[in-house]
Image (cartoon, rainbow, N blue to C red; front, side, top):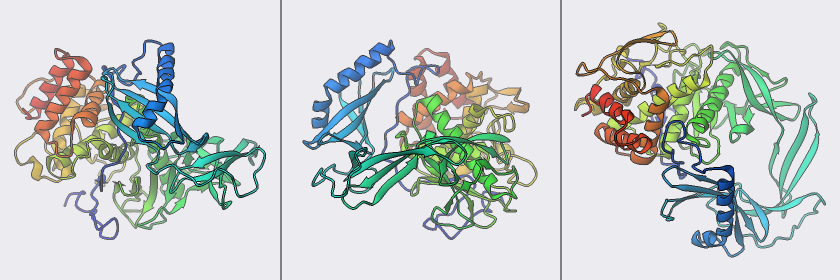
Length: 524
């Protein structure tokens, strides 16, 4: 049997069977993606001629804030404060606002409007959909002189709250600035966090020694990444539900680089999440998986000898098993990028996880996971077009999948035919993986970062690549703007052609390469 079929579980997650690097997608996210611009080099750069033009755009947004609030049907006591404006090259404008209620800041009330070039409001991304309203703005508990009155809308029903900051020194001499939000009626602490974040050292199993963004907590440290939406990494302790325990440490040096140390898997997962977040930001100007600046979280040590990893929309989280020996966690860098990218797909095209759309879903995670690996530029885990080459899931040192010639794994399709949609999605993904490799690197023999490739085409044609950076911009734009839940391979060709035209022009070499690469995998 293939490794894909050896890893079924029956216990958790609504009896959904997990397969290797599976994405469990239980529903579309609500956030709307940002839109890349008109070239690979500048597609995520705001299309303002100067910093003063951007400043002027923010000023204009603020002058129009009252009418925007009315258009959004906000309450009479609510006002918007323009914080940022990003203009895509296609004219779409994304305006980020903070919100106030009766003059008080609304924590968790921020929102982003997405407006077309013609001025029509396309959509709105809100930190909360709850109605902002409180019965009184007078605290019922004793108020410290330094406390600030706010509306807390971070979760649940918005309430009047008090925000205070306590300063001091952490045990290792690091300054401390702890922010505390307290319910102004009951005195209950609603949120408390350390604003001074630390950079821990992690000894990973697959990526060598890496820097980790951690947070001081009490007398130690925790795997909370305040630089990237507050991403947390938990230890499930071989459980199969819940979040488990937040991973903590006394001295901010994590793991020993082997599967014998429980922290090591957490190091790889935390590092992979950070690199994926940074890749999305760098390549696409995207703040996190859903584009809303909010982090997912990671869970390691799932189950007993669980040879798998998965994304689950219902918890908005990545989960990693420990492998057959419970010492080989499936937390390699491209695996982490793969799992997080299932969430991105859910937040954009929400490709159905079956048939040809399911293959495109899986391929998207392979494409972006591979791109994360190249982006990280890690000397221990260099970028390549091999999927899961570090985790040795087959037990013989071979990768899980090959993008240059997918059939080398024994099951994936190199080319499209009418039966591709009948394959398991991890095998039907081969067509899109092969397309992406051809578009990036071209056909024929070559060596990249020490790995030999020899990519064929269905018709013997020669394909010249345009480079991975341009290829991934085309794929992302197609995914986020032109693909839908039912997109099949023919539709994917059309979507990427539209994306390439938008980015590079109707007579561009990039568009011609897209056509040649699809023809090379028999999608015509």
